[in-house]
Image (tube, rainbow, N blue to C red; front, side, top):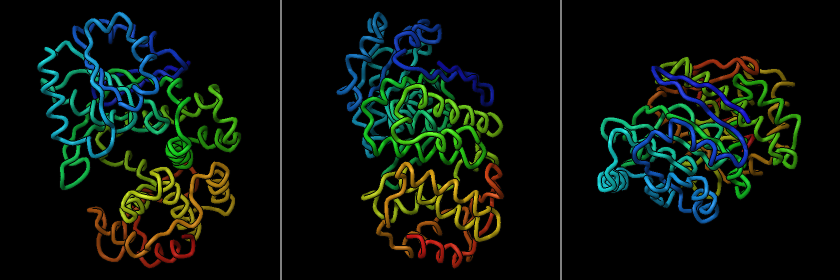
Length: 358
């Protein structure tokens, strides 16, 4: 069992990491003092773990309303949020109510947004059920919903009351979802958290499924990300190091229409491309680049030869508001664990690396 104390701005909360302890976590004062509880649950999670969730709620069910959510990205919309907020009103949620979000990143985002805007903000407890949500999206307070014109257009910062990472939910996690989380942990490992990198180097796909190993990895990433958020809650500077590999990864996903490649694979591709750029610029040694590439290969994080239209990927990166002229702004590495923000890379250099690697 790991307990990590996190803070951001005026908010302080704990991140709990353990196995099959949801019932006990929900008996904490943060939950038991609530007059009403809205539990937003991924429909897929409910199908697989509904009995476990209801058993964990136990006597809290008398003052709870269970709201199932189809957690496809298109349902993380402002219109969908409005319907859920109206349900909050119908169920008589007041300022002494709480929201619990049980699911992956979509449910976490949605629960965070709904709780953050309802009555100017009521507490939210995140129960992430994917590895990606445990190591990344459940920590930091970002919450947003989509409009028809784009993703995450309407949002806010709303720090959680509590984060409960129950590893029980990972037992049913598909391999692709595991890849998504491992790519994020690798990112943490190379931009500053040596513990995560060493855990990935010292284990393999089989041993990483053991509770005692995966709990250490989740804890390492949670400690690292919460420390970054504590120093820069609103992404004014330092927090942008968490975008390492994501500018390229998001452009790859967009160029492929979010089909044929997972988020984790796209981020891993972005990491590998960025590491090679840093090596060629003399910022990373051969040995450092080799450590990163070995982990990517060991866990199969990057697909072999993804079918990319390089020019289209570049165009998607050029759309980014941080970029201008004939260069793109990136987070680069001046050695493992030493990220540098707002570094410009000439487009022709980036394109050459991508052509050779993809």
